[in-house]
Length: 284
Image (cartoon, rainbow, N blue to C red):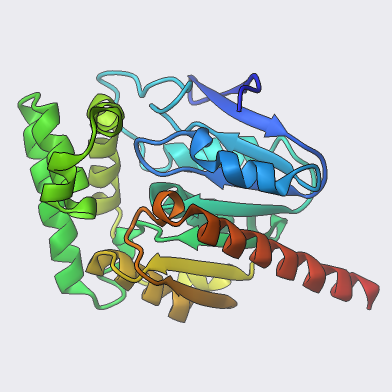
């Protein structure tokens, strides 16, 4: 996908985003260490029936990095998604994976009824774990965050990347991973460390702000994913007003890559369901 990207300024940072197609708007939010190209196949599947807005989040792809020496702001990428969504009029549909899904959840709170529907694939909204009575899972994430940030404090990007991706993939699989997979993670792990620290600092005292989200939401997780990711999905399943949950057999956290066709089919089906329900409501 070689389309030229548009740019928008968010908090003094140049944010690159794809703006392609016509029709109802779908905003796509990628995972940490990724970029908008992770959604290339989905964008092709959406074809000419939808308008796609797909940003590179701060520090990834063609977007600018977070300014050195400036304290990281936990809502920075929420503002990125809000700014990109602001390029469209009317209702939008949001799709996110991992960190992108966590940011999508927050922007849904911000945009309210503008969000017609969402697909959240393992949102790493770990700040919900304590409020959801998942203290053991919260301690797991605290340990991962501590190891990542301890390595970054001494400039050890490789150890920080191993702590991060070893958690999601397993240490042995990360050790065996090819250079083309490892290099982008090592290059961007400073932003990943900021994200973990921000998520850890944003502890939710209760879940009530999320009960106001009315958008029909598809929650997706890999059957083999880590316990904290499953816990977040189950918390949201019980908290959001309108949810449907799908466990992808044989998948881990990286299901949009390892089970791409199955994940894309779920996303497209949910968009179709939401749009059908909207047409029925409008007809009444």
